[in-house]
Every structure is written in structure tokens, then in C-alpha cells.
Length: 320
Image (cartoon, rainbow, N blue to C red):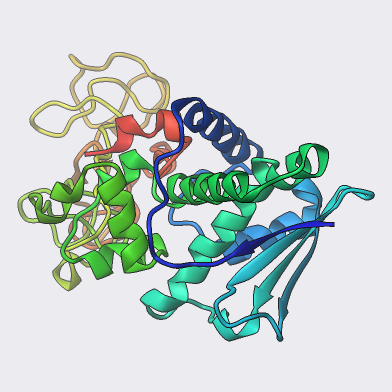
């Protein structure tokens, strides 16, 4: 039985070679697609338990155990006879749900262990053997896999860094893991970059001048516009300056030159009105919730919100 031990020192490994970097990206994209991962931040405790339940990648055992060395966060074991994996987590290092930076180190550790499994390090070592140099490189690759999984480059570029600790907490990683990742990407400048007002709940950055509530999630804005995530939700229907739809959101007919408040073809209101009759505010084209009272808008069912984060290759259109 082969095994990998996760020792978290907080130090960066040297960059992996380009050809291995491409391999990590390929396996990571396959993992994200196969796991149907569409939103961040990630919780790897939930993820690895789900993988065990479904038997993905041959994970049969995930246990929190006592008796592991203090410096050992976790270890992964591979049985070449059965092709199954066992992931053991040091009880003295296990603190969940995550409350502080040191707790969130576990999230990176589990992503690291998943990296060993997805990159097939233990299988390859069973077939061809291993040495200290190869093990060191495998550790570097697992760290790189974990960093890219938890902190995609495009996602990091879409955050407000009011403080490193706030951004790290949102990402479910330790402060040192975030700094290491930004340093590796040569983007430490993001920490002092310009901040953009955003909803603390959904990350929306679009607000009308007198908005009291977020037009996407209905969150009361005076309670917070200092969100970590920044997302530009595009208009889902064309409107003129008077907030009249130019194309019917229901039947998709061009109604730019019609008079009245309803589509003459299907009867749908051409305004994105609040469903609260006591409000009836005409909302902008992107609004799923009324910006005056927070209730749903008439167009909410028609306006399908884009995923907060999608596949790494497709993430860019939704980022500010």
C-alpha cells in the first residue's frame, strides 16, 4: 500500500515544469466538469465526503483519526490490489466548520490530498517506484492543484481585498495560502487595488442611484455594500431610457414601437414591475428583486442569473 503524507509548512514549492502544469490544468478541468462544480468558494470537507459516498476516484475511506504525528495534517493511502483510496485526517488538526485562518488550512490540505488522487501520484509510484525527488515534485504538484482548485486566477481577480483575512475567509483558505497564491501569480498588487461597491450577499455591483435593496438577491443595501466578490450581472432584456422593454421577455417579439403597458401579442407587461402592489416600482433590466422593497420582480422567473463562478475556462464573462 502506497501513501502520501500532508505536511503543511506554509512554504512555497518551486514552480512545476510547464508540461506538468498543463497536465494539472487538464486533470483539474476534468475534475471540475465531472464533479459539476459551478460555484465557489469550495468546502473540501463536504467535497471529499461526497466523493466517498459516490465512490468517485476510488475513495472508500475518509476518517478523522487520533495517533498521527502532530506535524501531519492528513495522509492518503492507496491499495493497489483493490484500487481504493483511504484518506486519514489528524484529529488534532481537525477543526470544522472553519472559524479562523488556521482552521481553514484543513480545506487546502484536503484539496491537496484530492490532488494526489486526481493526478494519480500513488498509482504511478506503485508501477514505477519513487524517490525523494519525485515525492517532492508530487507534493509541489498537489499543492498547485489545490491552489488552482480553491483559488482560480480569474476568481482572485474579481475580489475586493478590504483585507487579506477577509478575502481568505471568503475563499475558505488560510491567509498564508492566499498570499502564496497571489505571489505565485505575481498579483500581490490586487491587495491594494481599487475597491468596487458590491452586495455582501451575491456580489452584484449594479445599483440604481436610489436603490435600497440589491436588484439581484433582494439584500438590504444599507447593511453592506462592501462585498468580497464583484459580479457584473448583464441586462437580460433590452430597455429604453424609460425602462420599457424593447423586446418582449415572454414571446421575444420586437415591441419597440408599440404603445401601452403590455405586449399586444402575449399580454406580458413591458415593464419589470415589482410584484408587491403597494410598491409597483419599475426596475431596471437586470433586476430580479425590486430595488425599492426587495420583493421579486415580475421578470424574475424569466431572468436566469448566471452562475457565480462556472468552469474555469468560462468564468471571464461574469467578472468585473
